[in-house]
Length: 199
Image (cartoon, rainbow, N blue to C red; front, top):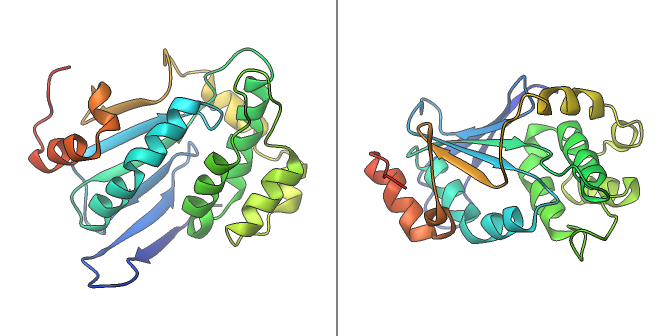
């Protein structure tokens, strides 16, 4: 399941491209070839409504900045919830995301947030059928990997070491950010300035 895919912008003038690469720990790295810094790390739980808000608010900006070679973005799917049904929802989604090839992962992530279970805290969701349909919508056929829950144990084993207090958690060059991560303009200014800020 390792690999990278180069993605160029569509429409207008293409400023560059980024590669989507799966890391050994299941995280996904987006970066233009040769971009090593600065680094923005996003820890997200697919069942977290605030993570969905972050995705909907700043994701397009992050993808553009990655394409322009201004930042290396690393997405870390985690399971932060301990209570049900949120925990199982999160685990199923994260395991399924690992099934999806890098070429289809961004579209699958978009689809996951689009079908996030509501109301939060009481709704069971991210069923096998929903995850398979989302993967197919993203152009990936990974039915057996999803139904067999191939990556559940691996996800849970790697999640044990997480000391996050909540999601989303966003780090810029190792420094934890605050509410500015929900402001696309402020986040872009931070990234392009490259110095970080105190929060």
